[in-house]
Image (tube, rainbow, N blue to C red; front, side, top):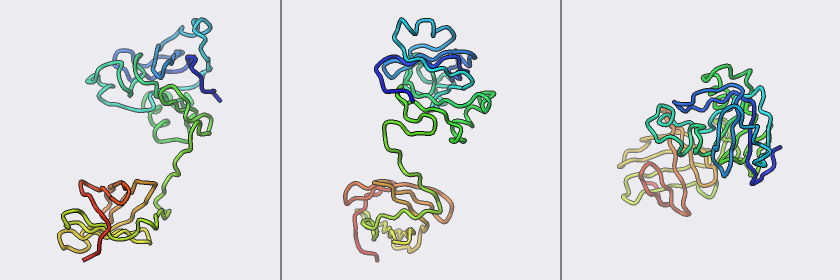
Length: 231
C-alpha cells in the first residue's frame, strides 16, 4: 500500500488516457503528482524521480485515467489544466487505475473504471490514495444501499409538511413513502432509503429523487418540510 506522504508520487510505464484533447492517450507513460495536482505526464519522467525524491509505483500493465470525468474538459470547452476531469498538468490529481488487459482502448478503460468497480486497482483523490488493491484507505466508506435492503431511520419516520402546507410526505416504517400534494392524496408513492442525512426516493413510476435532513428540517425538490400531521 502506498503510504501517505508529502513526497511526489510517480506512476510509471502505464497506458495513460489523459482525456486532454491536446495530449490524448500515451503508452508506456508516467504520471507525476505533487501537491494534489498533476505535475507532469508522459514518457521519461521516471528519470528525474530520484532527484525529486518521488515515491515511484510501477504501473506496468495498467491503464490510468481520470477518476472524475468532465465532458466540457474532454472536448476543450473548459479551461485546460484546471479542476478535474483530465490528467492535464495543473489539474487535480483524481486518478483511477485499472488492468490494461481489461482496458484495450479508451471506451473499455472507462467501462472498467466506472462500471466494473471490481476491476479497480487504485483510486487517488487529490493525489492521495483512497482505494488500493481492494482496500479503502484513509477513511471509512459509506455502506452501499441496495434496492432490496431496508434503510429506515426510525427517528425520521412520520409525516413531513412543507412551509406552504402544500406537500405532505409520509415516511413509513416499512420503507415506503406516500405524498399528498395540494390536497390530492397518493400523488406520489414509492420506496425510500435513509443514509445519514440523505434520503433517496424511488417512485413507483420509476424515477429517482433525493432530499437531505438538516436537524428537524427535510429539504426535498425545493420544498422545506417540518414534522406535521397528515390531512
